[in-house]
View 1 (tube, rainbow, N blue to C red):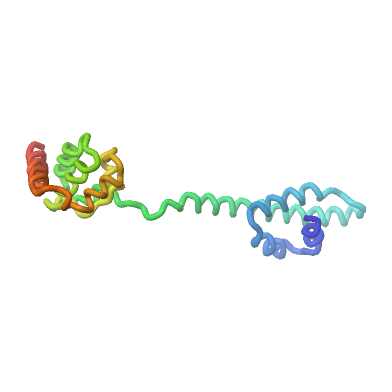
View 2: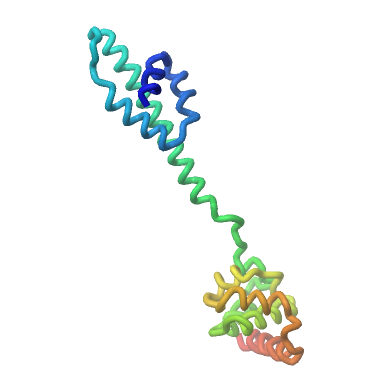
Length: 181
C-alpha cells in the first residue's frame, strides 16, 4: 500500500484519482480510504504545503466515499435482482373467470390435496379449459402446500399416469363445485 500512497501523491486532480479508483474493487477502496485517513497527518512541510496536500486528500477521500457508496448500492441492487425470471400469478392463467367462480371451485377442490391428487385437479381444470398451462410455483403460491414439487410435476406433466375414470371423476367434481358456488 505504500506504493499506492506514493503514487497517490503524483495524482494532481480529483478526476485523475476518480479514474484510478473506478477500477478498484469495493474492498480495495475501503483499504485505500483507511490508508489515506491514517497517513494524512502533517509531515515536514510548510503550512501552505500541508493545507494544499490536505485539501487534495480530503477531495480524494470524498471521491472514494462516493465510489464506495455507488459500488455498495450496485452490489445491493445486484443481490436483489438475482431472483431469476418472475413467475406469473396463477390468476393470470385463469380463462374466462371474471367473477372468480372457477377459481373458488378450484380452491374448494384443492383443499388438503397434495402431489398426485393436486396435479389431477390441475390437469382436469386444464382439460376443461379453465386454465392455461401453469407451473408448480404458481399452484403453490395460489393454493399453498401441494406436497413435494417433484411429485406434483411428475403427475402434472404426465397425465397418462391417471386412469380415464379418475380424470372423468375429477372433471365432474370440478363442474359440481362450480355449480354449487
